[in-house]
Length: 490
Ligand code: LRH
Image (tube, rainbow, N blue to C red; front, side, top):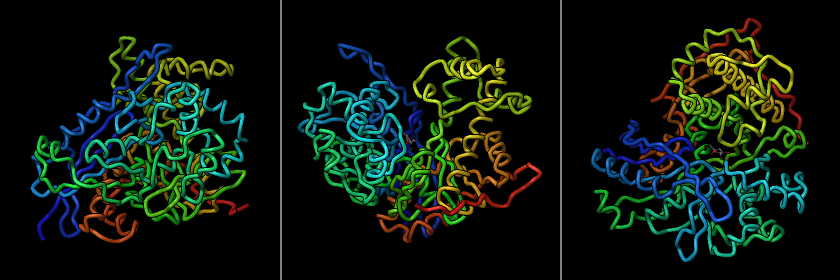
């Protein structure tokens, strides 16, 4: 049989990329055809400034990437789109109303206040199963309502659905990403009663679609401009980037925990059904929907954001800060500092990260990292400690025996982070693939086009074969072979 290609548009909060996968007879090759920065824009709105995503710019870059993908392939059959979760565009009559807000914009504080005034956070958790994040879509919509913006909209699209809509003219809301809005019940369907209770329109997002659903052909005027075959179709993949990443982790879900580490570090395990316990709520663990109906039971750890914002601040201050060099120096530095709490909400918005981290120590009367290598070491140590802590909690909260930890995404290239995580857990860390998200994306499109078949496990076997992970053995002396959960269920 002739080989075929599928393309992935994978938009991360720091950068976006377009990848093509060449698939023939069970073989899978992945090639990056475009990579571009995702630089948010700060716009004055008449009353205050707000942080937005430059969606038209990202769409332009994605289209340029697709044009390159078309040049490099001879049988491009499908395209899938994934991105970071929770954010959305408001539309009226099919037209976008202003640029989507960035989830790190601070306007959501109002939304949190109004929602929690009406609904006890525990009740909300029992309804939607989500950890508390101040930027979950429902808080953003509540803030939007307070601003009077919701009245103008007749629909909303999550970011990957918006890109798919601009490509095809067809709308839909894909389920894995919808599960991050806070508006899906734990039964996986829209919670209309919750929307009514919060005074939100109940038909904003429209019908839910499963990963693998066809979104139709690329609009002829676009496919002509990009040089795509007229037959190229768009598939709704597991469009939440983390859902795509988890789909492509070459793990045995019964005995593994995972860390999907990019801008965020998403740390948890895969379950067959939601796990709703008071302990899980307290530990801020979430139940997000994964590919093939799996549940991503995980906690959001701050992730590489702490490093990238620190480097950005150093450069802003005029230092030539190179992350590779600093990491090498950090690996040599003595771990002379306590770890700091990476979950502290002060680290969420963009800004002077080294200053905020230093404040965290000084407020507690603790010695603070002062030099740049010390700061990088403290960040990586603290991330590794947070990763290890969340893996342990995931095991405890679900009763799973965790024997290995898979670390995928950009973070798997950070050797110090992988090693320190293994050391802190006393468990082997299996690092890679770095492009797990794009892989999960192309796998679902390929399956929708019958280029491969089988369940999630079969897809993970393909990943394991073509992208064998790198082992980081724990250097700790007292090795425990597993991290065993208590098996408590309430
Ligand atoms: C990672 C991610 C994560 C969400 C956050 C908004 O990119 O999608 O899963 O919690 O961004």
